[in-house]
Image 1 (cartoon, rainbow, N blue to C red):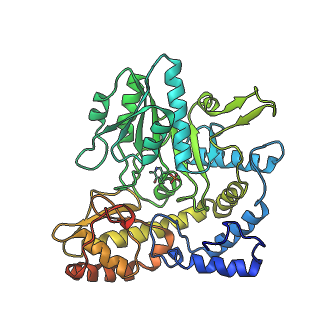
Image 2: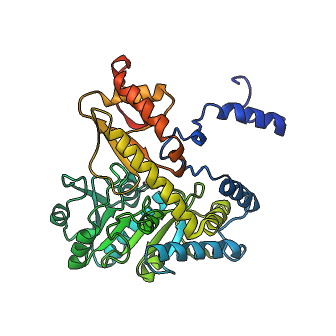
Image 3: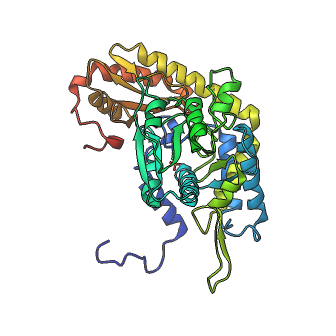
Length: 412
Ligand SMILES: *Cc1c(COP(=O)(O)O)cnc(C)c1O
């Protein structure tokens, strides 16, 4: 490669190129066999995956930047907002589609900042649980505002009283998760909401994970504490369609109780020789495929499809949890409310157990306190194999290199 220029001179023939691509891709984790957790929400649903591929091709070159040129995309977006808002009992016209949870959170925090500036707050602050997703830290950094972390109770849910003590005249918005990523627990939404109402503050519920699963979790008979717009005081929510909504990457919702708040998200600029420019969220040019595929996925699955997948996720989660708890020395952290959790060891070396699992071909996410599982529908097929390997990993942990625990398995 070194004496060639970076750009190929003659271009590469499609067949050669596809072979090259397959070769390069061979190094990637194969999520299809259920050995990864969290990066892909694997349904194993071939009909759905084929449909998504076909829809993506049909909208490969379309650009949602202009709703006038592509009214189909505008309509898909409006439909998705309405479905998401119906599931979460919000305002059917009070939201927008974004590229992912990070963008949804960035937009909600931007609106909160701007509303705080409007009422004369000079240095707006966000108060969020220690377990809030790093997207809140990123949003605070990007928006030039301060993130204040609230401590957790012993049950790993945010402590509302501690949160209240952190409120100052600079507070722009309170945040809680339904559920949080590290431990899969739902923060006490009603308690935080009543503080927000008392103090006249905004309250964002991050349901990036739960937004497209908890409504069905409840319908299949699982306990779900109040977490959505039915709780008075919740003013905005984020809900990723590309997680438990089962579409491919590039689709999330940000929803507001008050349509006026959505208006504050929009950006318009008319001082440009190129003409009037407007954008509802962070990007300019927006790919059509994720929007069309999210719409097609939601329409194809419908309530029954989502309930069927929720049942698979619930069954797999129960079997993982009881199987892990049955292995001597392993414990689940806290009492997870949904389909994701951390586990660790009381008597051994969790990093060494993680290494053994890596060697057995599993790709577990590593956290500060243990290993993390995010359960997808497909996992219902591999639980037993996983548990057999995990029991062996616990037994053989002494043989492991004992590499230190760190993000994504990287040595730290
Ligand atoms: C995934 C996630 C986010 C961020 O979403 P991206 O789609 O990765 O940008 C935010 N909050 C929670 C709880 C998440 O799990």
